[in-house]
Image (cartoon, rainbow, N blue to C red; front, top):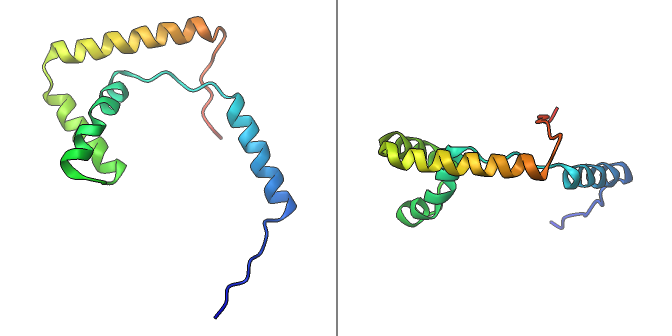
Length: 100
């Protein structure tokens, strides 16, 4: 059986372009201390466990975060604060607006 290709409708293409343009103008939020930690340990978790679901990776990261000594957590909190301060300087008037 052969498959039939149906090109996307004009309205679907228009919506896709509009969404991409809107996303390009959006300023991302700065990472918090846990997200910085998670991004740092992600490669190590991938080496240990291979390609696994992000939900599982986040659970593992949360367990490791809770077991980290306070100086490690303090370092990530300091880095998050520096990133946030830089974000405020680079994006005056920024206000978080979640997607609707």
